[in-house]
Image (cartoon, rainbow, N blue to C red):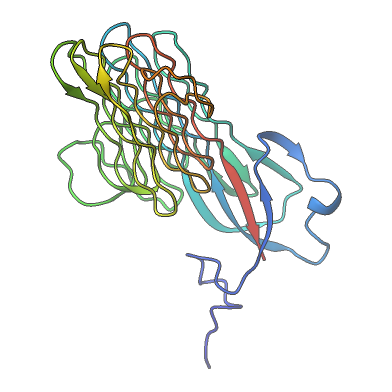
Length: 291
């Protein structure tokens, strides 16, 4: 007897032999209607579910922390006629923690949003199955635990903020509190979906951290310069879009380079801002369904 990856449900890591049938990117919770309804006779589908990315934070002086990437979950589920797609955390120029991304869910597959950058220079944690409340990431949908230490080596499923560690989803980079000299903010780690870069607010040359490099798309790059009107961090790579450079906090150029960059669509974390700039908004989540 032979087993086929095309019809054996034990092969659940990737949807081999299946076809992408539905992609949901409109944020919010809604009931499927019309052509979006799963046809009668389809009782089980494979879902990829991604939470919204966290927003970066901003600080009065120095640089804030980048937002963590949204969580990534995948697996078989019963058919549902409702879906939730999480928004990315909204970037702000108000000093404080960045807004968390919101979770996404389809059937029994769910993914948390990324944590916003903390009310400090610390980056937010990447989402696991649930949304973190700070720099420490959460357990993934697979059950893989997060490792909350900058001294950890190797790859985590969801990496914590400020560690620059790789993961399926990576945490936001740390900003710098130093306000003199030539400063560069911390970059996010590599991953399938990545966090935003930390910021650098200095009277010298300030360059924000880069968004993490994604498996499908690049993180944003940060343009530096002299003085506190520079130093914003770039947005992280999403599952379906590249991260934005600093100065694009909501995906549109502002010409103000202490603003962060928006995270790429599909869970990218927003880049941090420096010196009361506007932090980058996290990328929205998404749900993909195969059968």
